Image 1 (cartoon, rainbow, N blue to C red):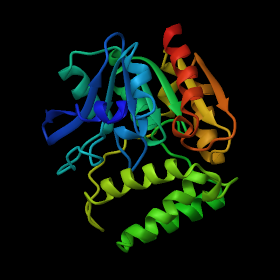
Image 2: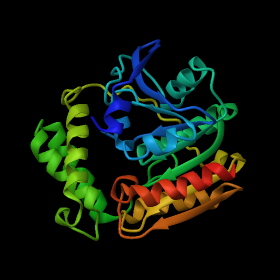
Image 3: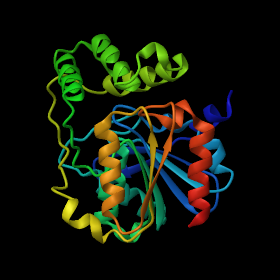
Image 4: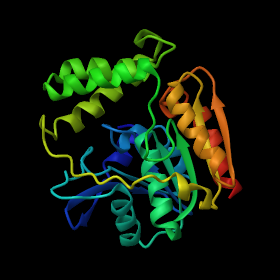
Length: 275
């Protein structure tokens, strides 16, 4: 069993008001929360968990409707779920590290529950007000939505993996192990849902007027080959907060933590130590 597998076997559950929410709780020290991308789960961070847990207390939840967490049966917000978990664990303020959709969870939580947030790291995203303008990305997401609505899971997985490669590469240019792992995680989450089911997620509303008031350190950790819209969202967030900066990892796309984990971990750990 690998170190990451051993960590995953220690999954815990928080009894929220609307079902059990899964999370990993490992290590000791200052709290760091890892928030995964859409359709995946905490295992997206398998390459970060052992390294970070050697120095910090790491909480890696499965966001509601993903991984091993309950689906929603009524209205909910990402930020409130995470705040409930952190208060249950008597944690905070914590550093929130969000990948893609997870970046939206991190920023929503900082806006709605600022007392729980010490710093923010975003990768491949910014706020929960996702902004897609690139015609190629819009076409990609529209096609993915059509396949999902039709229940064509195999087709959707193929479309998803094209998105992992991004606009500058083909799937063949990405490490096959990264593609395989992401397909496994996303297939697991998709299996929890049915086509046409009600989406109970309640958007926060336009967060941008409030973003300049987020007076905590912010780091955007980019993959240089990511979709331009993803980079733009992260850069806009960094440029809007009072204390933000960005670092780019060359040769990787939307999942720099999986494609170049050692470099990602080095940059992230240096930022955490600086706080």
